[in-house]
Figure 1: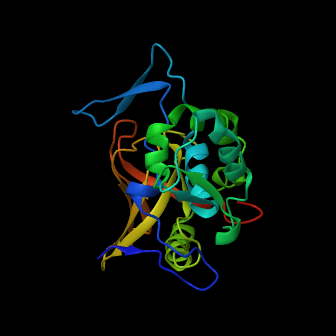
Figure 2 (figure 1 turned 60 degrees about the vertical axis):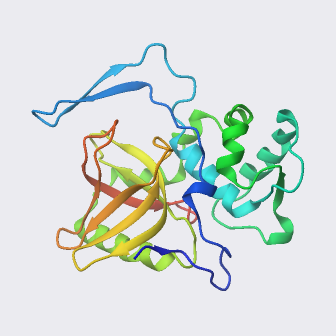
Figure 3 (figure 1 turned 180 degrees about the vertical axis):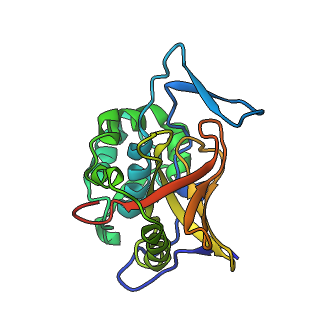
Length: 248
């Protein structure tokens, strides 16, 4: 059974829902990745023309949580003109991604039932105001990926993620394979299933907005695995929760 982060005293009062609380548009890729089915190796070529909306994976996962923590969507109100949403978006994304707002202090977004519907209709103004590509590079948490990641650390991280789900809804995971940098990416976790062998975390991947993905922790190997997709060959990743404190 999928366990969503549930209502808890002092925490966000509702669960994160993929079809409501994620962006409908993707973080685009500067490179086109091609998987060799014989060797399993991924090669890449530079996309031509270069997509306009690239290097925003951390911008999108951070912004998705900021809308979840700080906005209240009201579909009963009439929708605004696109540019009238600009100050509302900027107010939401200027707030702390680590702590949620009380209901009375949330920014009201009129005309839409959630972020997915809002981003389907208002993609341009959201892309222009959620943040620049530089914000995916200059993160306070990036210092951690250059240090060794031991299996004990990953076992502790898996336990930590299970503990924070009821308290910090929608934890954000930084997944990386340093020093290769074959993947350096952010995803939002919104639920999990446990078995004797694994913990299967349900996730929003801003590169693949059409459907949820999965981050799997193997208990015996004390290792996280991220599945094959159009930009990653699949396999082991190292995981750190980010946007959670002074150093992350």
